[in-house]
Every structure is written in structure tokens, then in C-alpha cells.
Image (cartoon, rainbow, N blue to C red; front, top):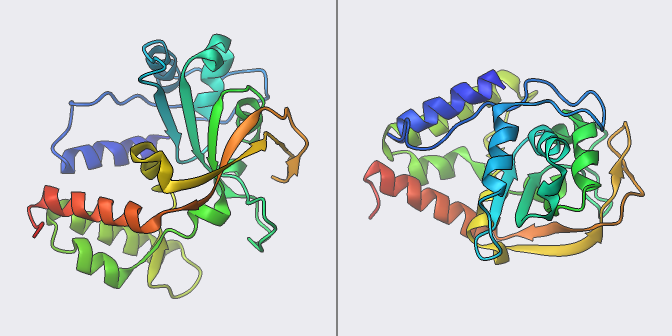
Length: 244
């Protein structure tokens, strides 16, 4: 959590937006079980913002990692699930039987209890599973062409991606999946994703799907990667003063 907060503060500085948007720390640990919240400023911020939402102006809450803060907010204020709130989660394995490897999906693995709380709550939920989010890949060459000259922000985004791959990836690679970005695309333009209504499952300790509450959720089966990346690159270039 602390490393994520440092990154947020760094990006806000590069965007010259320090102090202009609220930032609150989330939980530092996963839920101990499905009944006990991990209270945090982030969970409290979600609760307070949900009280300001309306049917004409719903609150969209995107999660690019575990669902700990959303689950904690629900446990702290159960009435939240009846408010006009849309949760968008990048996480969980796919449903269509593709070979995704043996490992538990990463975001889910960080807090399976929290995922079960949210999926079982009945809150409006849009899920972008691993079989979809991993397809938002960009190559080093494309990044250099699109945002390589887009000022300190563009340069930083490319360099930190290269450095991460060089440090952590097990073999040579020339690309990276920007798999968190579908959450932003769906908020900007919900029709950029193909969403299928499914009954909400539960998750086993091994990350597998089990029969669940059957509350309806929407699962993104495809996202418009062209729209997503073109919009992002154009905005980074515009900020860096290099848009044609």
C-alpha cells in the first residue's frame, strides 16, 4: 500500500496536480475473514462518496488490485450496496476455459475474502477477468513512437515499465500488458466493453470459481483496445505539449 501511495504522489507531481485531488491510503493488509473489515481512510472515502451519488450521477469505483477497500466499505456500511455505485474490478480468472496458466490470478490472490464479500453483496459489479485484461499489450517500439517525446511524464512511464520488466520478468521481453487500463475505458465509455450478465460466483482458496450468491454481475468479455490506447496516448501527448 505504501509503495502504491508513493507512486500516486509521484504521478500527481508529474501531472502538476499535487493537492488538487483527494488521495487516501487504503488497507495495508487483506481481510482476515469475510466478516471483519480492515478500516482505512480509503474505505471511509468510498462510503462518503457513495452518499453523494445519484441515479443520474452514480459513483464509479475502480479497483486495479485486491478488493479489500470495497469489501471493508460494505462491511462498515452495509447500506452502501443499495446506493447507485458501480464497482469495476480488474481481476479474477476467465470464464471461457482458455489456458491462463496454473497460478491464481494475481489481484484475486491478494485478498480472496474481500472478493467473496463484494461478489456476494449484490452491489453493481463489472468484472474484467485475466483473459481480457492481459490482451491490452503494447510494445516498447509503440510506446516510444506514441509517447516517447511527451515530456517527463511520457518518459517516466516508458522507463519505469522497461525497468520493471528487466528486474522482474523471467525472460527477454519487448512489451507489457497495460491490463489495469480497461477500468478507465469502461468509465469513459461503458460501450467500449462487451459485458455479459452472469450469476455472481464465489472463489475457492485456490482462486477457482464456485457456486455463489447468483446476484447478477457483468463480466467484460472484450474491450476496445484501440479506443483505450489511442485515447490514453493522445492525452499524454497533449499534456506533454507534443500533440500534432
